[in-house]
Length: 95
Image 1 (cartoon, rainbow, N blue to C red):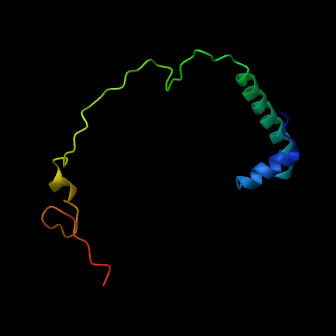
Image 2: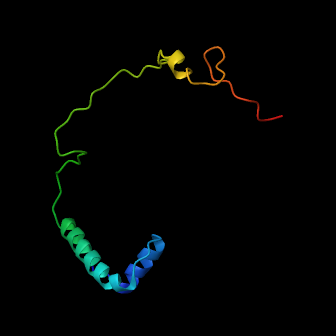
């Protein structure tokens, strides 16, 4: 897919990027090269290839999904200006 000068102007406007007039043709060529690489990737046969999240073979560590209070209530409220009963107190904003 060839990217022309008008397409670069339109994409730059949509992305809110100011591209100097002298750089439009160069950028169009570079974007055309990138689109060529993407088209080459589309030609690769990926049937039977499992999707992966990383190139390194990793196993996720599982933990029990337990609800706790964290056990650090005093540390959390230590910087509060007016803690009450282990909670943050805030001024009333609705009359």
